[in-house]
Length: 233
Image (cartoon, rainbow, N blue to C red; front, side, top):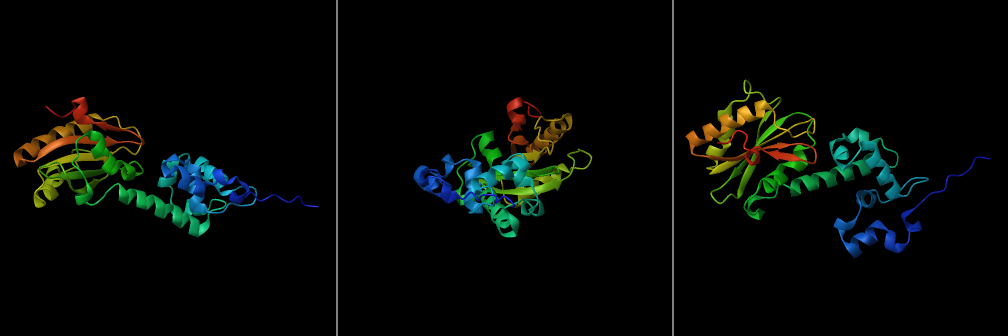
């Protein structure tokens, strides 16, 4: 006779240990990633409750960042997920991305490299190609917008420095911060990054637009070339 695999449900947990109840009592920021996923999944599968399914998904993709980078089809194929739950997970990730790029009127002045990096690293850390973006700021360092101007290997023979300032001029930005990602995950600036930074800084001086920084975004880390004194004099 075939042995039945027991079904483990969230309701089998003590009320104080259930993800939704914990979110209400202690706050979403206190929950583990697997618990947050469990709230999206709602139910588990035979042999696993929703929290255990969430833990398995995180292990499969290596981290929350890995889940962020995973395509819909791979998430959908996980046991206990399927089309609807995969869509819910990707929708939650997209909400987080949009929250990181709030409308300018909701943004305070950018006063540090960390605040600037926070605008773009949620999205850029998951990109599989190099992308270069320009953060546009007004005279009080408040966000005017973030524009993508380049995609591909960051090489001075391909990047036209003048293109980086097109939107800054059009939107009357007083200053800009350049950001690009390293798909390898290592944000260590390359000699090419430093060389391009020098060119961008010099072009900004000619256009009377301050280049405040150049950020290299990795996975979970970033580097400020300004802080390291690379490309800025």
